[in-house]
Image (cartoon, rainbow, N blue to C red):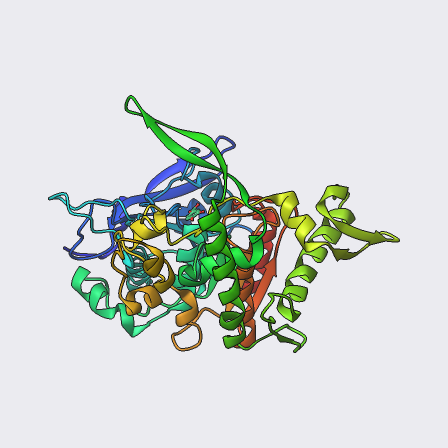
Length: 454
Ligand code: DHB
């Protein structure tokens, strides 16, 4: 199978207002695909096929945006403009084209992907293998495609944010090479220029302890879950209270977080060492609170409301402090304990690891002592393990809503600090009143990309 891009596959299209773009669909990006989903769509402002320019970019200078549609560690199909329902980000693709970007949307295997004979072939680290193979396909076709292959920017939300972070962190990482070769991925560099990351559900093996470090003492949780009845699946509200056994687990998990955090030797951008004492307080918490205070201040500055119940102290129009327990009760706990590595192997993350545990703690607490995924596989799914040792993207934009309870604020903060501390450029914020979501600030995201690429 040739993986060479064929310019005859371009089809011209227009948006309602006449903006012209061209698309090439269903390009198979590996020589030996194992699943139907391993195809990618390319979109370009049509101007680039005829020496034109958009927003100051040309075919020679335009960045290449690679947004993914992965959510819940499920398969993320190749996307297209005009698509509205979850998990599509069709609006992102349309806006990116209007901004002058070339867009490559790759279909990515997920935990429920089956091969032709019905075997599950999308568990960890398949999502990253596919994204790397897609990046390599783009680079292999550099001379045939518009856009700069040294200006590839990944983008994703939640599990898709984890995928964007993994791709950004792990350029050319040898750990993935044999799997890429098995699929017949192009023999190319798979590093990217920049990563845009929204609320990444990553660092899974430390996410349970971080969650309880944050929410311990709040025993009521409220969330959603899927209910299947008469062949129809609906999303319903789900709330409850941690059992006494879960409250005990929460205390144990909380107690194990400071040692992990301290082992990272993180520093604030101003050089302040960030650590936690055994009781969970310390300079890392103060730093995290300063990010929330900055978020509330920004909200205030643009005329948004910061309700009294949120627990902020204000003096002369300046946010001074946040009462951490009050703020946490204000946003509420979403998940029960453990939040990720379920004792009964029932979480999406357990499924991603092919119905195995990924923490020794949950395996021990599980009365069945179900198997633990291999340590090297768990590490291969954590972007932190690649930062600096692989060819890590130089530029990062990380957003995690200040009202997001899907993972602890500590988790994206550790990612941002690790990158900053190793010399990468990071734009990190916790946008006010923003839930678990992505792509809600495209003008700001695009301004960041334009600053880097123009
Ligand atoms: C997603 C959200 C979660 O809370 C989680 O545990 C895993 C994935 C998601 O939206 O992708």
